[in-house]
Image (cartoon, rainbow, N blue to C red; front, side, top):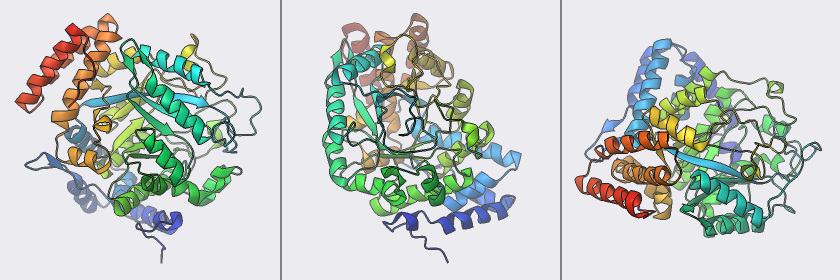
Length: 482
């Protein structure tokens, strides 16, 4: 008998260890049950409705059966279905962002992160507001409009006031045609009151990685510091939503624990948010353990191959069709290319994972949180996406128009994204091409825009988008949005 209850507010009940083990056993038992696998794939298919598409999604058990299945032709079907779902709800748009590391002071003892308190080799650094301004200008000069700010947990060096001041600074900087229009926040679990303050500061998504859902592993990997408290950390999203934050982002660090365990836990967390708050996660991130200052990924014996990693992404896309999925520059160009085809909808570009990394000519390595595999510039990443027929999007319109939480989900579910996000993506891409792109990227990008304007279903929307694009190119107008 498990203590599993998705509606519970207790971490060990909505993420039940027994239920995860039972799920893994069930999946193993049915991994060659073709009748069941076909039934699950059929359930997950997008259904055409008068408003657009509808997708059922999958339970953690159903999705775990797909993940366990090792029949090559069925895996191929999963990949095709994942791509179909991604295109049905998100089209061929890929949203771009960059991480901004504010401080690497940290009081936790996490065994997989070089910022851990005992690491005496890493230089500790915290950006002043003037230094943040310089970093943001450097990011704006690349063309970025969306940032994810990161900071270690340290109540003395990185109190909530510091984070709030930093957000205010970031939003205040207008440099040439540059502006950061959305600041997502990835900081340690905190109180309802502090989440309320973050909401008032105008944050986009609050992101918190679980690292691992296995309580025993979690406590072993976080031996010291406030992060050691499994329940407080795992229940953070409920407090964030109670504090008024509509959009929350989940993620695990694949490689710390058995991937089938993490996969089931991640989906159970998503189900819990859906049951209790009526909205699932806005995003799910899929980082893998990577080399960093004093961290050797081989010390964790649950590393996963690129093939398994791609399969995890596809199965997540099938299970949670309306959720944005993020992959970072931890992964190589080759891995990211595969991932884009099976469900990823957001990627970082031109990232530096060190504190103060954007204002230095050479990429600094001494304060990096992890090694960056994809070291291309933002312009190169944009051109690469265009070459693969994706629309690089710098859009932040939904967040700024108040289409967050369930309002964004209803937009996604009714297929209205094609009349809203699609033209917004084309207009923000026009801004990037006009202001920041190399000549080669410009040529390719404007050709893509011309082609993609024809794919806006509503004629009136198409006409407005075309007129706005001309205004951006010829008259220097900026920030149109539907």
